[in-house]
Each structure stands twice: as C-alpha cells, then as structure tokens.
Image (cartoon, rainbow, N blue to C red; front, side, top):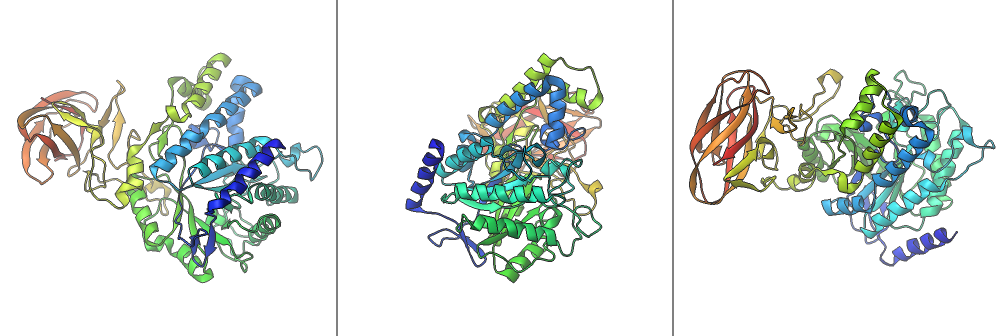
Length: 573
C-alpha cells in the first residue's frame, strides 16, 4: 500500500509540466500541440526471450522450452535463480540513461503476462486473477527511469495469456494448452490485465501508449496459419475493442495502439474505429526502404485520419537502418527498433558477450555431447546473467552512428584514434555511409518472398554491422574477409609528422592478388602485389614503401582489385 501511495504521488507530480501524448488527425502530439516523432527502442529479450536471443533456437525456441532446458541441468530452483539475476541485470537505470544519451526518446516494453498474473491453469479458482508484484515493480522502475530521462514508455503485451498466434517463439506459446483465441478465460485475463495496468499508470504523462497485442498471427478462417490471408479478422478486432473499453473505464487519456493480424500488418475487415485516441501499428523487416513498402500503412493513415507507428523493426544492416529512418522521417512516422540485448549481436546497439562455458552448454543441448555438471552449468549461466549488466555489454557505436548521425550527415568520422606510426587493424575503417566510409557488394538483407535469398550482410557476423565481412581468427583477432574486386575501406590516420612511410600489410590469400592505396581525393599512393599464402588464415606480410602522409589528419582508401584477399592489419612505420 505504501509503495502504491508513493507511486501515485510521483505520477501526479509529473503533470506540473505535462507532456502527455495524444493524437490529432494523422499526428501524435504532446499537450503543447507539438508534433512528436517517437524514436524508440524495444527492450526485446528482457521480460520475454526468443530462442535466437540466447542462441537456443535450434532446440528451444519459446521461453518455456528454454526454461525446461535450464532446469534439466541445474534444477527448478537453479533455473529460478538464473532468471532472477537475468531479469535484474537485463535492464537497469544505466541502460535507459544510455539510450537517452544515444538519442532515443521512447521505449517499447515487450511484456510477458506471466510476470503480472498467473496462467489460467495455475489459478486456484476458475476466472480468478492472481496479481504478481514482480512485473508491476519492474514496470514501475522502468517508468521512473524513463520519466527521469523524459522518455516515453509504451507498454506492449508481447506474450498474451495462452499466446496470440502460431509463431510460438514470439509469444511463448505452449501448443498443448488453450490459446488466447480458443479460451474465453485467457481473453478475460488479458482484458483484466490491461485494465489493471491502465488503472496503475493512468496518471503518468510518460506512458506513451498501450500496445494491446503484439503481432497476432492466427488463421481464423483463412488458409495461411499466420493469418496473412485473413479477410475479416473479426475475433481480433472484437478483443481489441473489448480491451479498449476496459481501459477506458479507468483511463481516458492514453493512446491505444492496435495491431493487425499476420504479425501486425493485416488490417483486413477493420471495423469502424471504436476510440478517438488511437494509433495503428505496423512492423517492417527485410524488405526495401521505399514508399511502396509503406503504401498499405500510409493508406490506412490517410483513410482513417489517425497516426501510424512502426512498432517493431530491425535485424538488418546499418545501411538498411539509415535508409529506413530517412524514409520514416520523410513521412513523419515514429518507430521502435528491435531488440535491446542479445548474445552475439551485431545488428543491435549492444552486444552480450558469449563465454566458452556457455558455448559448452549450447553444444550439449544441441549435439548431445558430454553433459556438464550441475555446478559447471550453473556457474556458466550465472556468468551469462552477469554479462547482461550494462557495464559488461559491448556498445555498438557503429549502429548508433548509423541510426542518428548518418541519417542526416553524409560525412565520415574515425572509428578509432588511428596514429602513424602505429598498427591499424583492417576492421577500424571509418564510420559513415556506404560509398563514403567503405564500399561492399553485399550490404543489406532483403527477404521479400524467398527465404533462400536471405543473406548476412556481414557474412562473418563479427564486430560491426556494415556490409564489410568481418571474421575472427583462431587467435581471437579480427580480419576483413570475403573481399571482392572493387570493394574498398577508408581510414582516417593522424600522422605525427609530414613523412613518407612504409606500410607492412598482414594478409592471407589463396590466389595472387593486388590492392591499391589512394587518398580520399582519388590520388594513387601505391599499388601492392600480394602473393598467395596458401589459405584463408595462412598469414604473410607484404611491404609497401614510399607512402606519403601529411602531418595531421589523412584519409586513405584501400581498394581490392581482385577477389579473395583477407586483411588483418597494416603497420605504418
């Protein structure tokens, strides 16, 4: 009770300088009437994990299966201890402070219902709703961190009671139990949960909106199991209308966000709109960044005269991110990128580092290798939970640069302070747009209709999220590989003197190849012949003499004239 009183006082105190969001025609505005373009990040992987985030997708996709695998090794109590640490470390004030500093103004919270209430099969009495403090406390804390940073928090029911579709990973759906659509009890619990949330946060100006059901994907009458060919979607609109009505009994102020079927984008059969403060959400992955891919959403906005919001997107290259944000800015559409944290992540703003011990667990689960001891497994899992703390993650500055600076600024900037004389690693090429900081022929993932055409833009999946292919050596160093004729990399080097240098180039190649070195204006500095070394990781050094650098900043480019040279570093002496 004391906590509830204090929270209410805090929320009410915020209205002195209210920034509450609402809709006005096709715009989202604040109380001052200012247009607000939500530039957000979804906290995917915190309250709800999908298997790919923990690298368990091959054998455990939904969260409940991941928990089963962990409990098998360290017991139910050990699994609960791991998840307690995981949830505590996953998102903290430091994470939200960092996101604000990076440039985001909003957060989308993917909620798992089981942190707020019991599943229907665990309720002691049918139709009862037992409320759990854990989820509400996590949300309270997050809201305070957002409010302190003047960031909007959008609540997103990512895993609804019973699961809202056939894609079991995204909603932790156990197919042996009644789904959201098969169970009136699950629907009533969903409605009750939203009413409880709305009652708790009705007076917060920093709640940006209520995203009612994430990515429904279900065939009510159509043939496609994920609902992409549904024409009426009647049960979906009915439930979202009932949730809205329940919310409005306690909260008349906050925006209601609805999503279509087929992972959010199928709005067929939409009934007359039932609320005057509503936003349509759509999701966008692995397609072109042009007006044609937004047409259905833009048409929705124009037809109904209400705002649209790209509630989830990401999992692509820096090139794609920059192009997408430029497109959304053009159309005044807000967004939330996905996700915040995952293991071995180059396409997000942070990376959680894997450990050799955790890899042993993955190998056991996937391949049935020797079973680790309980002590070993628990220590490995608790270390992974520790690695989720903000101070232990790797911040991906190249992704942040692509999302913010590069959307408006075509210039390049150094990725590190590179000095001559000194050793310069191939992976330390400049930050900037493709065509300015580097050039690569495979730089984006377009998965329009054929999954077989899906590709990794960085085929080595290491270190950076550009098109440049980066690999890790056996000695745990990085190198640029899979190079093709015509590709190039630019480096900003600070020379301590006006001087002529020698570049000692460490490389590997299965063929005789050539590279050329130019300055950024296109002036040829030298051409270097590199004899075959006999393998992709059989390294040799070739020297290029007579390369003149002026005192201060120099921008040089290394061009690959043939396919197939791997570049580790060059030493400037």
